[in-house]
Length: 343
Ligand code: NAD
Ligand code: UDP
Ligand code: UDP
Image (cartoon, rainbow, N blue to C red; front, side, top):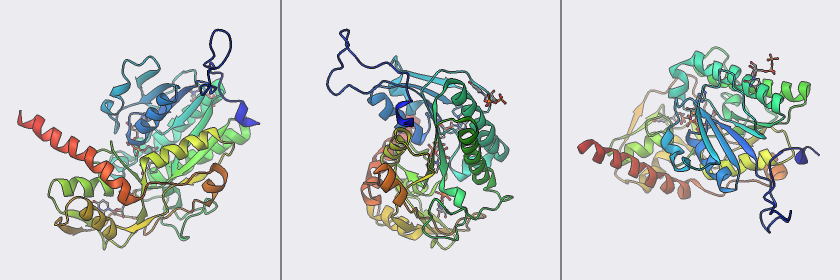
């Protein structure tokens, strides 16, 4: 089957050829594009932790060296500052392709660059996968469903996306990336996997990246009002980052192409999210209403039956359990920064 064909990696065998108990797994050479970012750096931690060799390719647009600095000096880790829009030659067994800004504020900053990253960047990584026979995993997004007319969203739903709107560079870029991925798979026999990721939060998110969870947490900690856009009745479903990383790894190691929704079905309005942040950080935090952004999807909630059945995966960390883990990281970074500034 396709599962056995990955990895020309060395086994962890002793000189006599015997594999010590518990170390039967092959050590792989894994490329993580966007590995200095929020999700990517948590994935890198897991891959290094299980004994793989990891190459991170990242242009550090929204990623930070600080996210992976704890691996510097490890011979199984390498960070290459490189833009995936340019070709690159590497020899690896697996490619997790994450490189792409994920926050609306960041991806709207230079929309042409965003769509080039999604289209040309994905093409280059598929070309690389073809050249070396690596398995390729695309991190797509729930945004491919646009402002969905089906709720919750199932993978078979084709979506409701504005092709000429301010979010299209990202939505349509990811949709094209999915198309490219399937065409390399069908036409050229490349082993591929597609994940459609729903809103994810956790430690190492950019503090001021404009996403709702990072905004509310930073605002509550800084004693600023929580900015709710629109009437606050729009919904999102928030997944803790460790659940996502587990899902991505199961998808890569499993036998199914996908696409798979990876998200937490717990659905919240933005006003409910603000309440949870108040309960977690500061019951006296004020709420301030702001005009909403253009083309904002009204609701979003994953149907994860497919991932449950075929990957034996489902999230285990609820919003109320995950939020405090993110808050302590944000506290360290926000108040640590202030102390640095005082000096
Ligand atoms: P992030 O912005 O923290 O990470 C993206 C990383 O890609 C950054 O390190 C950035 O520097 C790098 N990058 C961007 N453009 C690049 C380029 N042209 N060449 C090389 N590197 C580049 O975002 P994230 O939340 O970690 O998202 C990771 C992936 O997951 C993205 O592909 C995103 O679309 C997808 N995703 C994330 C979410 C979420 O809620 N976090 C939801 C859906 C999909
Ligand atoms: N590519 C790359 N690294 C590789 C192999 C290919 O960056 O190891 C790029 C290559 O430059 C091209 C893209 O991936 O722009 C698609 O490659 P493919 O071989 O599929 O297409 P072709 O080069 O034949 O158009
Ligand atoms: N949002 C908000 N306040 C903020 C930032 C965002 O109310 O400070 C809303 C935004 O309008 C959207 C939802 O939160 O309805 C999620 O936005 P985010 O940018 O986090 O992710 P999206 O799912 O839109 O990509």
